[in-house]
Length: 271
Image 1 (cartoon, rainbow, N blue to C red):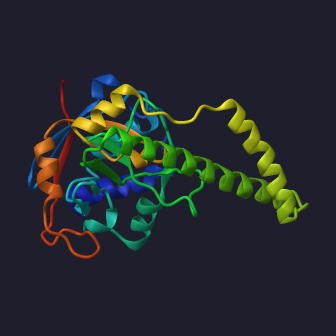
Image 2 (image 1 turned 60 degrees about the horizontal axis):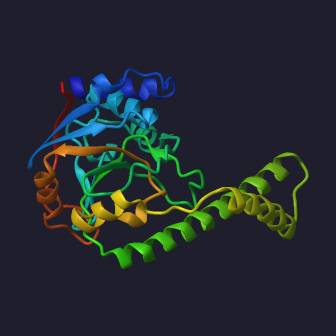
């Protein structure tokens, strides 16, 4: 068994024991991603410590060595971290790596401008808590927007957030009642969810793009429609040209590059 596969086996063994107190912090927040098309340096945000420490743990264990950028969409993003894109793992190890998740860490000051690093996740229908994939991440390329376009997106994002919340409330209330042995009729579930939704609407403020967001989305670009739905936990500090290079490769109908774009190595680097 080679060193990298031993590292992955160690990761699988440690997932059950994973703690948010894993080594991290500002002194360990820069990561160099060496890819087959060039180097990208990223900074991890200390204000998303669960994602930061999880990512650092995987980097230190060599998980990302040999992993492909398996989903690439020009003017949108480049995605990597799928354990099935590397060799030497058993089905059980793959299942564990590809299904473990961590809690969302949404922060309004972090958004999907070009170069943002965010965690991939499953859709709301199967993942109402919007938990992040433990291993898969994406780097935003995006495109530029006008201020009127951003106002339209802002309204759509707020609508989507409310719809997602209401669906989650419905599920949580129905599940809780069923587990208590006193299942509710759908109309009763809707009534209780509506009351909780009313509380939310009267106490929470809608997402509103800040002046900084508007400026970034107008000048460097990004993907504003993803704000509030996926956890942004870092940003590119060097190598945006490499992100553009990867985003421009030819892909098949499933958005998989026709020629492999591989992560050769990741390592923590000094500031």
